Image (cartoon, helix red, strand yellow):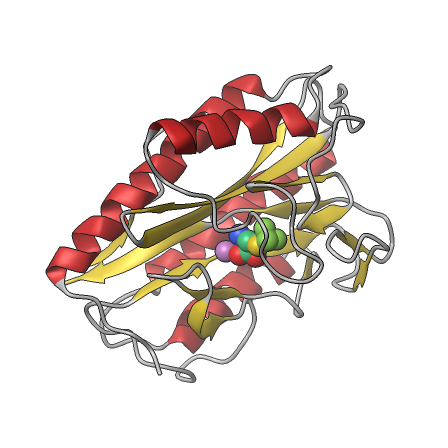
Length: 253
Ligand code: MF3
Ligand code: CO
């Protein structure tokens, strides 16, 4: 069942989303060569604490995820664990995926940042992954179906020969970070749940330079591309209001 939020609850989603946007803004400034991924997690944790919020990722799952954010570098697709000994270097790309809860509601967003001089091919992958999100967003309209969004993302990403990750999807969000429905990055138009006012979900293309296939690492969290080629990610939380879709985690650059 897909939960429908009241106007009052949508307002709380806006507040949580704003906090996530603020964290991503700070992380973008801090992500430089020489910085550890643990330091980035510390920055996120501090901002969440100052805002009086909490970090649903801490302790989530089994084995319990040990950090507030996921930091995934180069061929890591998602769920990279921040540590002291992973240090950003020139030419890396890093995805920061941030979930924060404020006053009982969640925001979730991810960005892939460029560290120093990144090669052109990889830069294009990052840019087109963001564009794939916005192709999906064009289909987020009251009366459309989730499959319309999924299809638009897939069609755009595959037009460049990229691999669209299948085993991970976007998701509903609200009082919890992962709720119904699933929001795949591939699919057929006209299929899936209908988009109605009061819904809240995340669209999050995870796009690989090469094969769509991914592997789970021994830490039981980090997911990497099967061919070792880079992967990019772009995510926002979207709420459906009577005026249409609104990204709670997005601010103009
Ligand atoms: N934003 C991530 C997602 O939607 C949250 C991962 S949960 C964690 O998949 F525990 F791995 F952090
Ligand atoms: Co998400």
